[in-house]
Length: 308
Image (cartoon, rainbow, N blue to C red):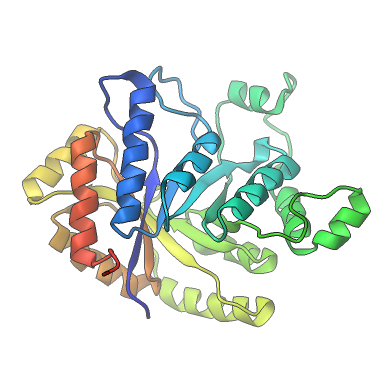
């Protein structure tokens, strides 16, 4: 298996003296540094909170800025709450971005569940019901038609999603288990599993992943990218890392908290356990300097940076 790859999952939880826009400025700096240090991905999450200094709810408009400011790192929204958006509109945005920045745009599909008032506003439907159907199965099928049966889709609907026959985004199905991996196989999606949403065990996961990778190849002619997302805090000493984690006031599940050497030990174990070679890290550090330091520590210990 290839060298371990490490990406970043950004929730926007970072302290700043300059309100939410200051947070965005700091995070944009972190994306540039992550790119320079050889991280594979920088994914932004969508969350609709009642917090007056949150930097964003949906970070879509940040993606072209980050892509333009960086050179190699993949950038994505992971994940978009697809139940509450048009598949057509989403495909328009991400296909155009994918052609402006080829093979660097990731689109993660999440089955998120914001409060009912947010659902009504996102759908522009005051009568939105909790019993409303889950539209994700229909919408991911629409993605498949738009991206993989483009000529047929355009002919049937008398519309083109520009640029015609152009690049498409790397679409990921996001889940907290591998129960949905058959959906990824069916629709030619990649797959990302979070282990920080649930404390359950993941027995026999490696054998399942290896089996599903081969099933994917047999059906689609190429192997998927499968990664695992985790959370934690890293610092030069265990005590400092534990303090960072404590100060985050987040209930950490399946987290890695400790020194770079401890991260290396744990991630190599997880690489063997899950049978994947890419991990997506949500750093819970609240201070910009700690986040910047973590990027440097992890890049060094895993030798992420390409040598000149």
